[in-house]
Length: 110
Image (cartoon, rainbow, N blue to C red; front, side):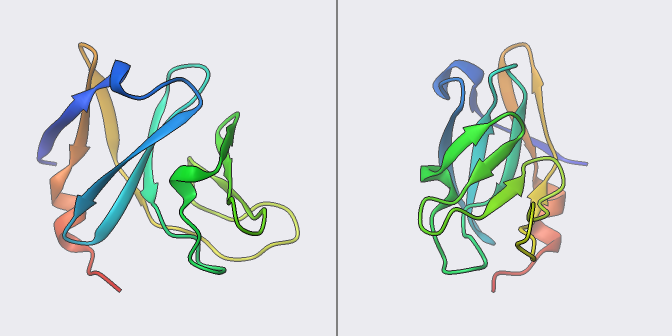
């Protein structure tokens, strides 16, 4: 993996999100209440809603448009909804968020 530094953990509020633009489209970075960070596609597959504007609860996010719920860990839709969103490897080291550029390069934009 090839890690790139994309910012400080403190740049994202707890239970909040930030968006970065990449060659595969917008990637949403979520910080949970327990300070874990997840990177997923910012686009809901249902109606294209911006997941970064959704509500973070536990390790899940609820789409702001139609209330679909996605696991931030696996990208899978929860409950009666079906579908998934791409996830990207991310880690936190010394308070900095690192995203795997290799994985981003292997995926193509839709």
